[in-house]
Length: 170
Figure (cartoon, helix red, strand yellow):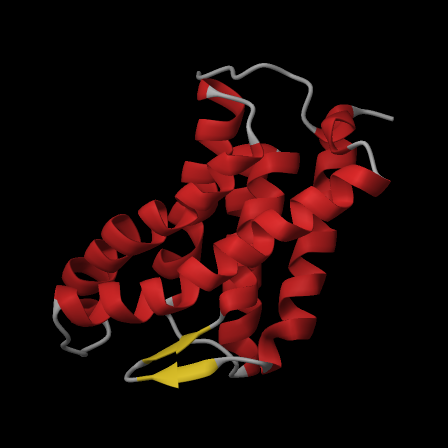
């Protein structure tokens, strides 16, 4: 099977899992934080890489917004985390511990985008500290759960079959 078709199929699987579980979210101010998204980001970043993982986070965020289980802040709150995990895992070091870097993408990067780009566009106002606190409240436990899922799945499934290609930045 073509690598891209396989990666798109796994992308669809991650989107479906994220949408199905999105009913379990925590309302915090204008956001609805969703720790399971961050667990999926860790799994997606390690298995399908940063770009397909970002596509999965984007589509999950859009569907959550449409279903009312997410807000516009689901996009900057989810996408940077999977890109950071995927990039560090595939380009720097193939270690499951790279999954714990998900809060780096979600906290500083996602919160900054939410504060200075998204919030003004939708007429909301909140501080950078607020968004970082809300996003880290969700992404730290989510990344730990994601790391545990990866460690458990490694005992059952060969996760490397999804991501054997070395990093290619174009």
